[in-house]
Amino acid sequence: MGTTLDRPAAADPRLPFDRPDVLALAPLYDVLRRQAPLVRVRTPAGDPAWLVTRYSEARELFGDPRLGRSHPSPEDAPGVSDAAVMGGPQGEYATERADHQRMRKLLTPAFSARRMTALAGHVRQLVGERLDAMEAARAAAPDEPVDLHAQLSFPVPVLVICELLGVPYADRAYFHGLSQRVGRLDTGEDAQLAMDEFRAYTGDLAAAKLRDPGEDVLTDLAVAQRDDPAFTHDELTRIASGLLFAGHETTVNRIDLGVLMLLTDTARRDALTAAPDRLVNPTVEEILRLSAPGGLGLLRYAHEDVPVGTVTIARGDAVIISSGAANRDAEVFGEPDTFDPERSPNLHLAFGHGAHFCIGASLARTELRTVFRELFTRFPTLHLTRPATELTVRTDRVTGGVDEVPVSW
Image (cartoon, rainbow, N blue to C red; front, side, top):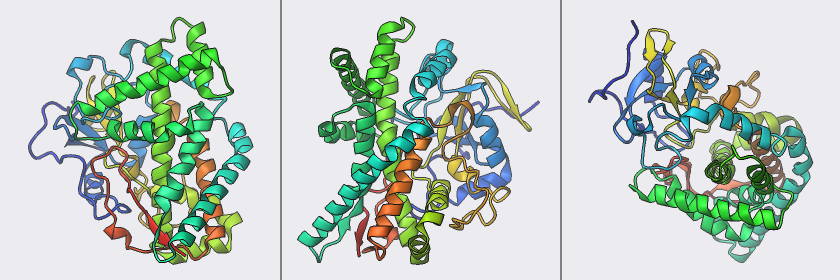
């Protein structure tokens, strides 16, 4: 009989693990990966969970239909944190699979690779405008660093996701404030209060779309909810707020971390600027593989017993899949901690795998490729004005990351 998870033991390591800096993975992941495919840990809330750090098991469990975001008995579910996006189960256990299939069917056209190709020119225009703003900021204060996070990393994904969803860009400070509160690990009930407000906000926007429809995702969701009794208002607001949160928070962090990776070793920057057409795509894939802005992983719950080697994930157990750790598995990636844009193949799990593969992957790639090509074409001598090790890491957020990237050129 396999090992099962019951109560958390005092000796079980507790997430999030200490890491040297924002670009490094916590060393404990390597230790745990060598021990077993799945290891017992405690969540930030102190409850038991299985942690997956090996690539093969992470890939397998990402695609395993016996795991889901909902829980068979939500009141008994192990808690993870105070955060409203990573705190515990989401969705309805009885209808999760049908709800997920409906969501994918609704959203796939809007996030298709073809749609993203058509969007690329507009993204390039938006990036160009933000690079102009960076130049203007430097001209206004030539002796001061420019905050790339505020001038580029944050505005571009927000502009893009607002246009795609049909959310007013003028509301960016409001919904970003809600996003920050929703993703906090340590604020008690405030994260859930913020999520309630976030969902009410997206629900009001969707209702307005029925009166004044547009060519955007919120209009599509509102019309689908009106025409399908099985598609509830609660599900609509959960999807819409999730898209708005993930559609800017995660890409903002990838831009910040990618820039830090390229500027902490300027040979990487110089290689990209010398051959952008050839290297921008594989550089982005390596950034995706190595960047692990948050300190947790993706949360799933077992809907039935799932044997994995000598371990049995029991029905109801929490499973945290660390794609960041799996993406540095030496069994799959040679010299896994080395930044190598020439790496091929690069079958990382940054977007997950299987039925829950991130629906926004094409959008994220379009934004990242455009940002890194245009940024380093415009500013080939871009450099940090402070060491990356001195930047404050947001350890209290699900999405992690940093609040500033001071640069000059």
